[in-house]
Image (tube, rainbow, N blue to C red; front, side, top):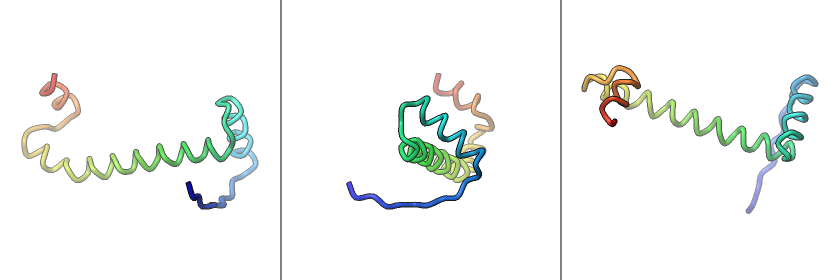
Length: 73
């Protein structure tokens, strides 16, 4: 797999937190940050989809997550 390098600047406190979290998870800093970025991008995509479908759902009476869960349960 071909990869790209991304350089970011973080303050020492955040770097320490990253080091501790990576160590606890048994992964490298890069793997930890890569996984976090993947998760955030997935959350952003989901948020975008929700924004796009919300008007259609509301037009059909689905105003909350509970409305949807009730329908599919």
